Length: 130
Picture 1 (cartoon, rainbow, N blue to C red):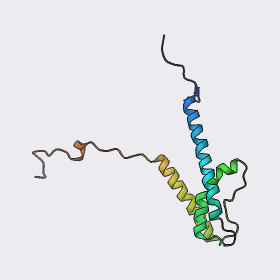
Picture 2 (cartoon, helix red, strand yellow):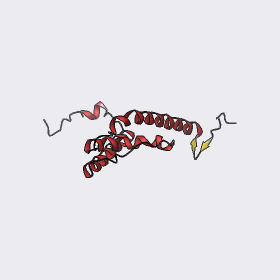
Picture 3 (cartoon, one colour):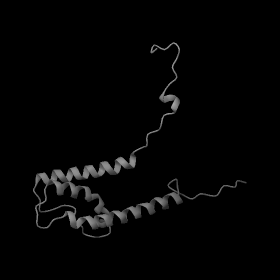
Picture 4 (spheres, helix red, strand yellow):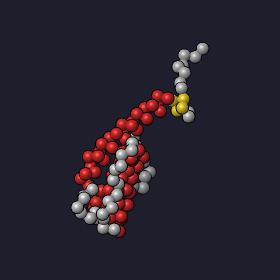
């Protein structure tokens, strides 16, 4: 008889792992919703036409609005009173910067340190660098 504990799987993944990932997703969603609620009044001016800078801010914040939108809140993700093409270019730049930071950090792998012997190979007696 084997002394292994039975592991329950969901699509081939242990249930404990699925529950942990779901909890992390919920916590991150709550934090993003809170951050968006805090930042939104500061970056959506009512009396000004939004330009490039506001476009970058709105584009960067737009993915953070998803949890609030999924929960049924009608939050702003785009300034209707804007300067046209410059605002839209800024919006696209903001979305791409947000994606670069998020996905870049999510998929970044730390560099492996080379062993000391590989960093400075021993000199060979017959080497051409005497």
